[in-house]
Length: 283
Image (tube, helix red, strand yellow):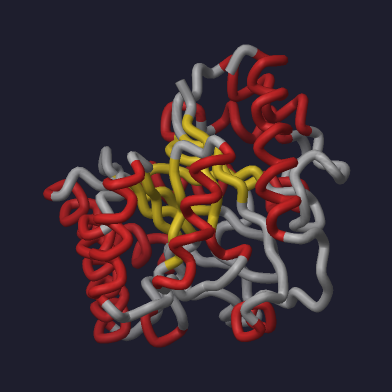
């Protein structure tokens, strides 16, 4: 049975106690869990959220990105060590949250380019760091799910073929693939074929519209995605990731320059959409 989640990035990349009323409203809508961004370096807030989630009987996941100073594919061993340290820190915060999974494109630095295609050496460096991170995550029973994102934000892993190849090179049971419908809508030929290609190692799914607005309101081929997830017996998270300009620093970093939909429209209508697609496709 899949779980349905909502990502707090619709409000901010930095979690705070001000968001706890939002969490309560999301619980009342019917969400099984909340996905927390990990930009805050305040360890206490993760413990606070973890306790509140427990009180509300909510599950949780996390989303992580890394920058050029913590780049797992950097030539510098010192920078790669910082990447590993950041991932271990994230695992510790996931434990504080009582979370079960950390997703995101932390296989490489976000929006950092060499102006060249990815190399075998870069995949090998990433795999080495991620293997060690997977070992650390295993001690806490945390799954790491690596996201393929679009060509404008990353050059290492744009497709399921690329991220699947990396995960297979890592070869650790706690390191899996993260599929996002927004990115796949840009990079993949067919969503169903892309999902099928990583079926045995698929660990997380983001439900995200082509424009990052309310799921179901755009042109993502949803039937293809949901039918294939049902066919492969997927039982993980279906988490809405939708963006706004509520947090200008985050919005500027990801090139969000306009509003797509209001956050509660995304949450309320998006939840109903996922439920209808689950029922339609037997997921």
